[in-house]
Amino acid sequence: MLRIIGISPHPPLIIPEVGGEELSRVNSTVKGLQYLAGQVTELGPRCLVLITPHGPVLREGIATPVGETLTGHFGRFGAPGAKVAFSIDQQLLLLTERETTGEAVRPVPLQPADYPGFCRELDHGAAVPLYYLQQAGLSVPGMHLTISLFPYRELYRFGKSLRRAIEKRGLPAAVIASADLSHRLTRDAPAGYSPRGAEFDRLLVKLLQERRVEDILNIDPHLVEEAGECGLRPIIIALGMLDGEEFEPEIISYEGPFGVGYLVAALHPRPGGKRDKPGEGEGSKITPTGLAREALAHYLRHGSYFTPPRGLPSLLSQKAGAFVTIKKGRELRGCIGTIEPVKPNLAEEISYNAVSAGLRDPRFEPVRLEDLDQLSFSVDVLTPPEKVESMGELDPKRYGVIVKSGYRSGLLLPDLKGVNTVEEQVSIARRKAGIAPEETIQLYRFKVIRYS
Image (cartoon, rainbow, N blue to C red; front, side, top):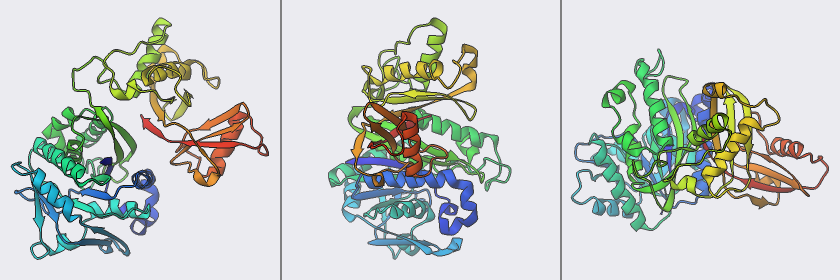
């Protein structure tokens, strides 16, 4: 009953009581974690698994405390009043031990008498994401797991076993992989500088976006070493929990203002869907943004619409509304989409909307073939709109809005720069539809999964 896997950074600096004035420099991460915590909480998990790279690293397996409740605070970072707590689900721990019988990697239950600090206090790798979850209203028991130095594929196998234990536990569950990426992005980075630090971060984000799990398991060890990361192993354990299953990656934010890469992401399982394996079809590796670019390029070269290849992943085979946004640098170059699906599948929806965004957005001159290399594409896949009764049910960071009055309607995507309040969001959507402020309207909200 796995509902979501979140990937969260863990610098104490992003705790408001710790960061103070510096918090503005990690604004994207703070907003990203607030968004992720809201998503997790909304799914209603009754069990939480925290995978942290901090804590005892044992040769025998994965360390996990068995004390009833762990508490944590940020006193060593100057904020003793910022506190978190986490209860251990003893039944889930027992099930995990059973599911890993005979495996190379197993949980190693640690008693408070043996590891008093670890078994009573939360490390910051767990405490930071837990702080944001509890701020969002989530407080459920679960398991606290560290990492080990076993080979990646053994950690991946442990993730598979952990998923079986969760399913047998029978409770809706969420997983957080606590992961800071490269610590060597800048000259003043905490682990020194390496130009390969940024290369590692870019590659890992790309591989997650494209669901290339096999490539993550085979990532160059020299690149990993140069990056000085502390997040790859938690992510690999989490990916093992999705073995063979379709999932949708959502890259929420990434930044590295202090020389460390902070990634906030969500992996959304799709029950019943099986992930396409490498080489299974010529379209198996195509991504929403790659499809958008290829569709526009094909139309510019041939004057006809692109026909998506066979063997598409299930994401692109489903039906959904989608918006394609094109930018040149930071400047908008075109944005057109559909609120609800009008094509047989999402691949065709994206293809047609990409051409429209590039050539038919009335605000801009049509894109030329020679412009393509300078353009970036993002695709927003929409969930079905749901009617709301008041503006109190809206949130411009989490939901897009549709405003309707008679035959007129205006749409605004969520989490747009400069749109910070519901009133601003609805006002802009009114103007787009030509609906006056005094006219009666119906409101609808929707979510998006953003690929960029």
